[in-house]
Length: 181
Image 1 (cartoon, one colour):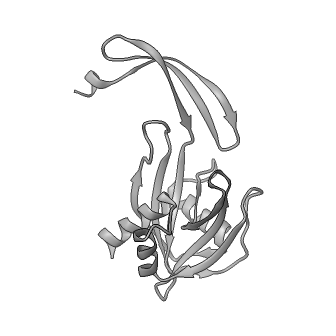
Image 2 (cartoon, one colour):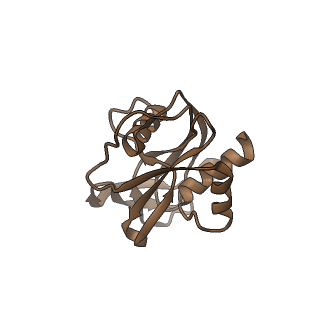
């Protein structure tokens, strides 16, 4: 059945490359034999961490986001790097780098494809428990991040009242509220 819907890739090239992502252009053949082009953003895998302190607060970040010209409020997140053995290792690294916190445990929550019609982006969600501030932040050259903590219920409310606009974070918070709490 899947073969009836599958597109055939005839050729592919990187149409544009920059730090963080590439744009790939493919020559494709549709199931009905029609040939054409399809472009998509090649980004890969990222992790999003819901970090819980021993007293149940959530470690949150505020970070400038240039495309939307405002400070983003949400959860620590980042791209998997070559040295990450698996997504949980990336989650631990990103939490430590962005917040200075480390966790006792990391448990997988959910893996999703946020926009699979135009990107290969994959998000791996983790809940980190027992988070304690153990070090200073170690930010990338293009990050400016402020760290705070928040009550989980206030985060759920911020999703509901449209003040937490970061979709990655909203999905992690809602998933945890719906299935894990």
